[in-house]
Image 1 (tube, one colour):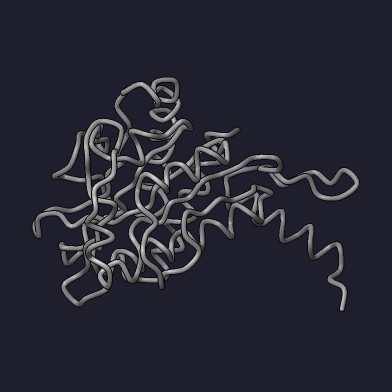
Image 2: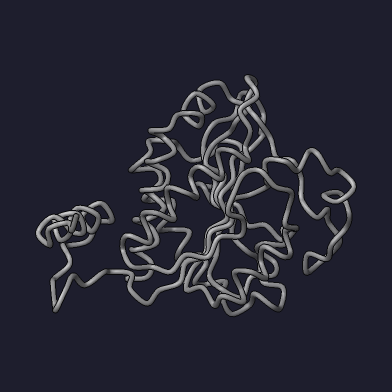
Length: 249
């Protein structure tokens, strides 16, 4: 059964408003605000990384030094894994962005695998020539520490020409994430929510504007109660959608 065009346009208008845009104007159909844009999403870690320690522990070059291919990520005290959180938020985010017309490139498409390595994840997004990209994570910080942090690249050669753009995108992410999710900026990592990092392959090797967000601290009881919530995960995706639209607009 065909869906009435009026319902399609209403849905697109709602999505546009969710992203902080005026409703799209139909011109022979609905004009989508992210049409022609490519967005890279890297949901950190993977659900089965723990099953193959020899693989995830082998060393790769991160642009400055050797680091492990990947890790298992952290988890809450109740055992809810970071890998699962990351993938859930990425899934919601990808759906939001596609509805707005973007082509989405994901570094993994399930939470039941191993890898890929962090340098390969950077290559996947670089080769797609993404207009902007986000690495999605949750932190395993001190139990008394709260909040989210945006990790930004430090110039090291390959990423030199995207440092300023990454910082601009980071500002958009901080503003939207705080407003939409209610999560405070980190009180233990970085300054005012920003933490420059030069030891992560995803940021060192990027050739596109990119940040990594630690959406909260899984080792903190208050943050953990939010992070495991489906409603918070959806709000996190909405915040990132709005920040991406802000940046690309």
